[in-house]
Length: 576
Image 1 (cartoon, rainbow, N blue to C red):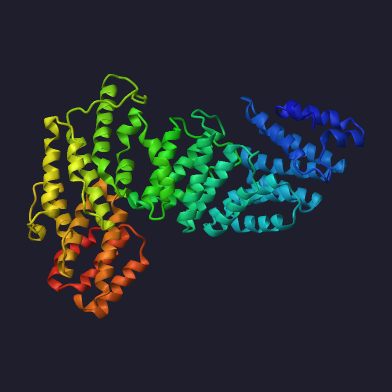
Image 2: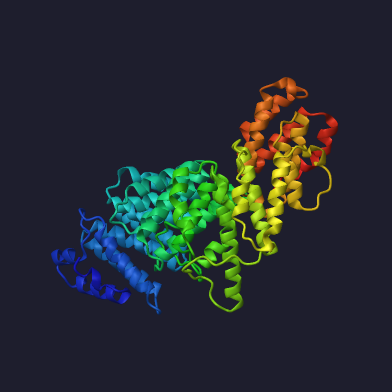
């Protein structure tokens, strides 16, 4: 295999075949390799030839196909079955993927199989053509034939398992896809490139998620991200560049599905499976790629948003992310920071962090106005500026989200109102936030019960939400509880920044309240009907807006008809 490094394309390959053709049998076999006890060496030569040709500006796949046919014939004459298998497999892939002629590829595969018998690489190449044509059943049957008995290296078995997983994914058999991706990854070692290990692990995570195993999927994404972070390079080249971007895109789509953003991302996730682990040349579209900081943040978002998120992973990621002074990052990661504050058992720094982010966002706008790239790291945090309407909205939304999170955990008191007031800058533009915090104290803990104002007009969105939160901060009968839940849920559902963020804690709060009422049927109307309906709604829907709507619909049966009619429209509007 000493000629391996010298092959840089079809021309060099033709020269090698010319030399081998003139040699006696023993010398030819020595040069070409591929006797029955060599598994990967011939394939490595042919992969090098293909890569060399692909890098040429004047690449000629038709000529390469001719030379591969010649190599196959020469290997047969020389009793080199592994080289013949590798040459035929590369020919099939070249005809299918490079010359876009799947019919010719299948014909070549069948003719070579008649000559060689059932050789693993050739069969795998045929299976890949069938899969690309949509005949996944035939492709999976071939993979099932190859995998149990064929002798092959661990590295190549991993590739076959990966291709089988991709075929299963195309057939939407997600448990099988997850199984095969997992088996493929298990065969890799630290000697494999990080691009391969991370890509296989991430696709395993996507398949697990689609198979309904979210916790295991998050573990796989955590592992893949850890490999990328350990590598530590911000600037990487192909194929690692594309692998990283496909991993990031996959996690982003899973995040959208967990939060049901725009109705969920399941179809987009399905289309992403297999891309990060693809062995073909993969080129990410031009444009900026995700930095390591954004990778870590995307993983953090997944664990924060999912009901099955790992708190130990969250705890390990938060400190390093909060230390960043990157203007673009800190100025735009409101959602992540809000989830962190909402998850925390001690959100006393929630307003301080929100003010800091608002200062970074103001700095981002100033840099852009001056035509300066805002993707810079500052030596120290910028000073707080006058509070804009947008910043005030986001800080108020942060406080509302934290309150919902605390109520879901039955930890509303003590609410750190004093700490939040102390963290507001003295600038008069922040007076409206001080007024809002005063109103929070009055609505949640004051002597006047706001239940009577539940359906009254309010001057602002935050005033409406505070009425709902205040009503729920007190003991309620079933009718009052349903009215408060319906009004609050409706208001939060109409607020895009808050809708996704509060989906899980709000659903948990509503679930717990109605589960407790179901334990005392006498407190509900028509308990023989309403209690089973509530219990079924809780058991049959995932935590989030679907759960909230389902439980509240069932609760309509547990209250008087006039109230049910009054709030049913609000409950119906929680769809989507």
